[in-house]
Length: 228
Length: 194
Ligand SMILES: Cc1cc2nc3c(=O)[nH]c(=O)nc-3n(C[C@H](O)[C@H](O)[C@H](O)COP(=O)(O)O)c2cc1C
Image (cartoon, rainbow over all chains, first blue to last red; front, side, top):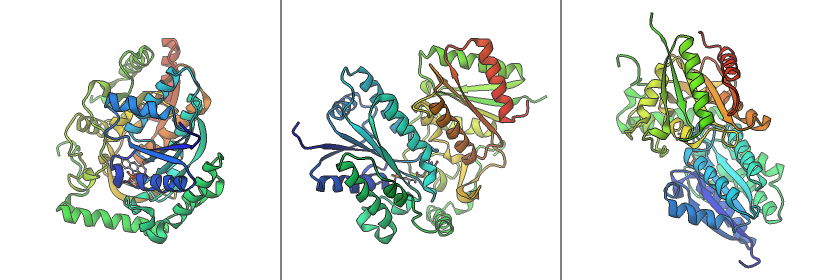
């Protein structure tokens, strides 16, 4: 490998390229590329579980300077497939005689409007870095990520302005070999829209989707209730 | 008299002797206290990863349309009075095996939002939910990992509307008697009626 620095984006959403995770990760990757970084990418869904592709990925990760994990929040923590990947990666790092050379950052997004829901999952990422000896560059947490609907951040308009600025600040710091600054963390955590409005739009959108699916009357069904 | 029902989700891998020992003591203690215990070990089951489609909220409300063993787990959990997450502590969180099952049970809550302690969460779907117990298994108890573990269980308890919860990390090498005492304390701390 040459002196160019390498960042590798891992997308941990089953929606792959159409996910908010991918959009956030791509925006950061593009900013790093502008600073002369080489950037690669993989989708963990579809890859984890395939031994050959897992081996290839782990081999690649031994060579890169920065790993960007972009994932949704599932049940207050990382999705199962992302967790499985971390288990495999930790084993690979432990099997390697040289200490790991890369650093890790994470960009997490969740459905609830408060970014704080992501904090336990970020703590898990930080703990992973600590246990494996990877550098930890801090992470970013976005609330209400479902509102971006996986669109490129440039196409989301004003709603994504804080996220874009946060990722720009993060990219500048990472490219300089620094941790993600507080200003980026704070910007990313800013509510996309006021909470009350997010809640109202969210509730309405479930009804709209259910009406389309012809299930509006059953939305509160309890299929596992005794005698149902 | 009808027995109280407890569900244990065992997220350990095959060959994890320490986790198997914790599970034995846990099952034994629960049965001694009069519980009926059903154990589900994802490593022995067919559970596909969640694909994030939300069809379990919209298309087939309350049930994931992707048929495998996750439906039985969802049904057992919501019918139980106590659900135990038994798992190797994995970077402070749950193992991927346990997580695979948990990602598939969001059908147990409603898609609609509500506020709990000022934060947005989902409304309950069922009138009652089980108490939650988190039993983490580790070679050594690390306070930072144990802190993440109990916060995670607490967050799950809010989202799943558990009436009470408690979490602890136990060392794999703990002697059975000490383990039993630790589990008794945990059950008491969760507030679950015995
Ligand atoms: C199985 C499952 C569990 C989820 N759990 C949570 C949760 O605990 N808290 C939350 O705020 N959002 C939760 N969400 C919502 C996602 O985090 C949210 O939809 C996110 O924007 C998806 O991002 P993506 O497009 O990158 O996949 C969950 C979604 C799914 C499918």
